[in-house]
Image (cartoon, rainbow, N blue to C red; front, side, top):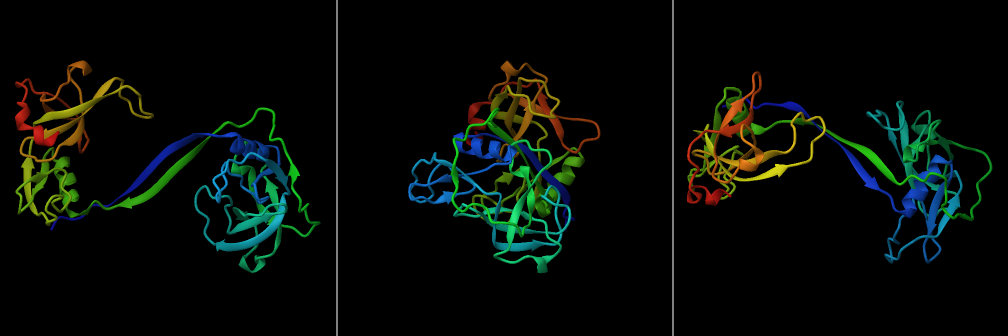
Length: 315
């Protein structure tokens, strides 16, 4: 049996979004050490504010200012903080109902240990030294035994100088990926400049990359079949937007390629031909970059184009 591969995998990208008037006012307010909520038609004050009532779906625009002090409603202890969490030492995740608000805000509480945390304890905001208009402008909450804030929120027009209109949040997921028996064999074959699929014992179709089971019949596959290396472009797109950290000049072509002997098209970049000359039916072959375990791109073979009937089921 083929040894199953395993490797770390990181999926990381910046998430960019624009802000409406309510979220813009809320985040800009945090930059100015002001916490804003929004009042619903029934008089409930929501913090963090939302643009539409979660009960009635009515649009909400009446902003109010609440206190920087509040009460813990529930909590959970975090003994091992992870990368990019609010604090580098053990802390509590808490839901805090700020004075003047009817809902709770999730954030971190800096406390010496779980015995120091309880529902009903009084806390206040510890503001970050440098604030940019983000939820991280609240560095954390800290225990507080001073006077209570005002229970009645004050009206606020939401107007600030240089308002925050958009945010960029870095999204990152860390995995340890195990591709399984079938894909492990496929990847090991690629390292030897070979492409291997698996044949379904029922319908006899050959799938590349293999998944260990036929997607049509639902039957386990085990018979390995070497395909290609040449293939046919079944369909394609022209890429005109340059990807970050990808050293490929635009425009370029990305295509679905049906390798000879395969019953499923895989995707790859087409090079060695002007982008506007790539076409369905173009015959191509892989080009392997030195030291890599997969084709860098596919180039034309110089053969006549394949007849549409030979690949129409793979479009």
